[in-house]
Length: 144
Image (cartoon, rainbow, N blue to C red; front, top):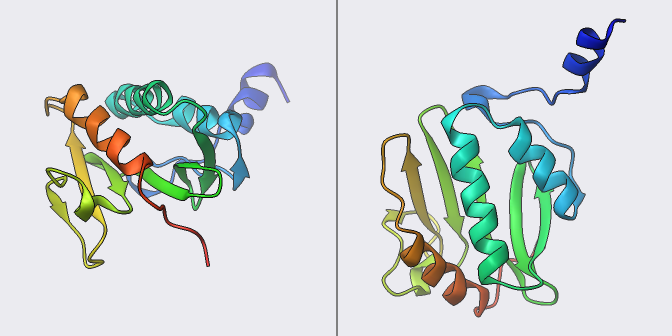
């Protein structure tokens, strides 16, 4: 196997919509591997989301579960996750209905709210940081 072949083999497989397939793991390393594998304009979006969460919530806990980065606090659970789709990045606030104002995307689950970011959308970093701050203070989602 030459260097090009081995580098390609080391790249995560992209699932439908360009979402990287990353094994479940705890910590910043797997999240950074996910971000590095995201294609095109969506990589800039998820890099900004990751940086904003890390800056807004000191000591945030990170993991990759079900091919999506999760953010939370020890003993409190997960408050945010995101996933790449073909035309947008979907950010999930697990207790988003409690945020003021709530993120715009409704869910079939009463407490969950979404923020979808498309390629040409503006991204209000101040509002996003406020949502992250609020979400990090609420009890998060815990895997049952």
